[in-house]
Image 1: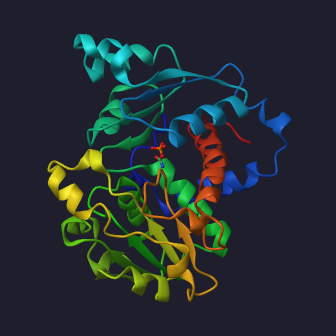
Image 2: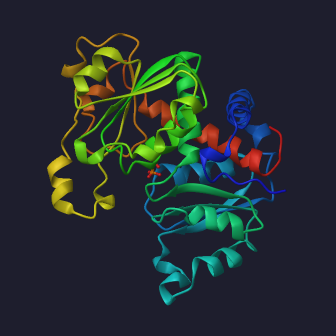
Length: 307
Ligand code: CP
């Protein structure tokens, strides 16, 4: 049976722990030994949307494991522009590679690719739906920062309506326990209610909403900032209205608790000032670093290879 990584909803707590343990183990494997893990294997990156971190870190992860990466960044140079369907594209490229990594603006596309393909498929972001490899690296970062994933007060700030990284991370975190979520967004970018499970389904997890970033800075252990994503808005006037709703700078952190940490999936625009980078609160470039190791863990897991 091939394994895909399409949605965190498909993962059990044991699956998530398996990825975290694999990433942790990989940190202790010397680079030259890693090169012997996936020789001869080819990964196909199919990016129908722009990316810096996800595509390049998957490609770097494959190279670090001794395999090779091929693919496209933007469908403009593929036969999609001649009208070829996603189904036929997947059925073609699966003959060229051992694993497919796909990003697409349309929700559900990765699921379709996973159902069609005989190869393992990784969802590298499908519209506003999910971004499970980002979630695994976020969880890995949280575990490294706090030594645990439960028992935390976490604020999600900004675009909670369209942010696939927020949607995935919340859906994964509710599998853990003793978590309090503070949702900080403009009215028009509130978290869609369907992402909040009924209380009976998740143990000791609570959700609270506020419009105040200051509340989050004062009371939370972790702030997960997000970019307001121009590309997801059907109405650009609404984007202009909310794009600067939440911006954090070093001055606002003057009285923040010492243990507070700030994460961001990146890219950022103006929601975190560069002045924050120099503070102890900034952990978003640690996320980038952890992304490379987690994506190695994902490739090994889906290809059934031990570190
Ligand atoms: N976090 C993230 O998905 O970044 P990219 O869009 O650069 O891949």
